[in-house]
Length: 404
Image (tube, rainbow, N blue to C red; front, side):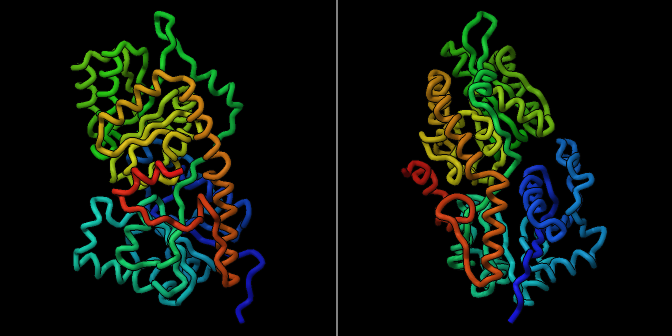
């Protein structure tokens, strides 16, 4: 009988580490020491390095780079007690371990972001069978990076009763809430209370930054005092600035360009509202964790992967039906006019992150789950990270956020 190690050796394998993964990895390293490794299989894209994502990688003690030590990393993947594998398109990294019948925990975003109808493709079905379905009875488990992941994998009959709630766990800050909300009080040039709105991310089609600018136009038409901070950059930047000029919003909308992660957090700390406008192509969306941690009142589309896991409509945020601008704007207007609601939702959002969806809690749950697997049992939670993943099809996500 194989002996169970006192301290299991756990290895995460991903395309690259970033500032959304480092806090969880740090928490695992604190617990496991040299028994924890993070293997990065490729160099980070220049765009993400320019956004400040690469600055934290220097001197990480547990980080190993496959492209610098292929033999050593391959041996570690095969020999570790538990390997968590995700974010890597090339299955060759994990095939030897799968073929050896050793424990693998996959971490995955959606299979069918563009629509579950794609599951009918014969070629796609063959690939999904080879990578996933054939291991239905093997010691392979799935961490679902988003609310619609389990439903996608159910379509290909993969990981039956072995799919679990998961996500990303950015660094969590603790605040004295009265002090934090004092930072969110702003006035305009006339001394009126001014609501501070924030949109942050890459300016690309799937994220629909134009929703924020169009909402700003409506708010100005209604005489509501506000400022909209736009943090980010990308292909749509020029067209967004043209839209601001066309609407005459230069005094209300400020573009700040790309900012490093710490600076984005400062914008969140001073924002009343966070506008999260992505569509179904947003697999998770870690800015939601960060905005909630900053006690922002959030309005977000239900199609975003993180939303059904993190937000309960009217309890710790407002959720609109993805693609419905009218509903989105109604929620923005409502939040701008109701400071009591903003505070209630912001405080509840903060509690969600600091009590459950944080790196330290996630690491503790993941460690317990891994330790249980080595002992031949499954340690699962009642709710939150590492609870059984619900089967939510995208069309059901809007209703799911409204369940009590």
